[in-house]
Length: 224
Image (cartoon, rainbow, N blue to C red; front, side):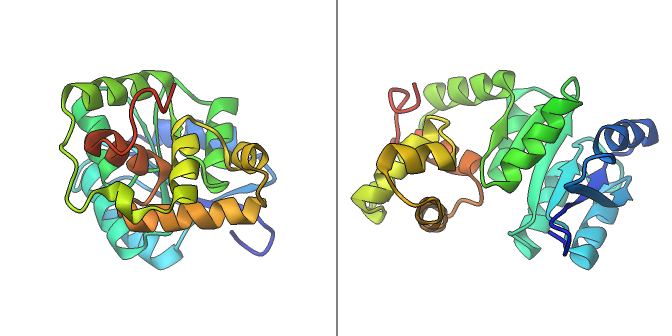
């Protein structure tokens, strides 16, 4: 964030009208600042490296470099930059690939206005954001194609408290809700989540959820 506490955002979409529509919804928000725009993935990578924004709103299908490859490069260079995917694609292949690349959220372009603003604020507070349609597809895929647990088991890497927080996070509970549930300081919860992501080699709650479902570290009962 900048000195005014605003979330600095780069918009990435090859359609100028779409970028204008997103800007229309965001530019009047006192806690959001659009610092740059890009029309393709290569430009997005260059701008991310130069400007170090807090968040990038990323389309997938673009010329020169698509959103998936751009997200991979950006997360490799600057893992602290959050990526929110905003696209027309809602097929499982696109969803899984870009979430596994480190995107913190995935929304389809029929979600704008207040829902987009809320999603940005959720991500900047450390949460992950998936539309209901996207979450359903992620869960169905994980159920059909589970991975076998790795050796040593991922669960052995997490302390009992970390595992408890991880499972509450998988249920969709916010950091604040987890702190209230476990009677912990909010900063303590955030610290545990940072450690969990590091141990799982995940860059977001969403990626951590995918890893847990595929390895058996968490089950569908855990997220009900």
